[in-house]
Image (cartoon, rainbow, N blue to C red):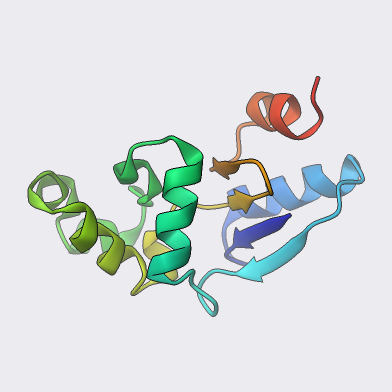
Length: 118
């Protein structure tokens, strides 16, 4: 299991702590230093079943600075994937990738259901 995180993100810190408490093995990847490629993002998006706009970190400074709230509606999937692949801080985190699924953000109840099979 890969977990893309940002070291200064409090939500990421909570998520990693939760994984450790549950003894779930993972590979932590710094999303700022090792942003997923366009091809990886496309594969994660297709596997997730989510809308591509869900992959954007809407609370990030860069998202706001670029005015993406309004611009995303006009952008094609290819343009959105291109943009996401340029900067890891535009990607919602933590981004969890397993063999079967992709999870965005940390919601304990969802993680418990998806990762612990409760």
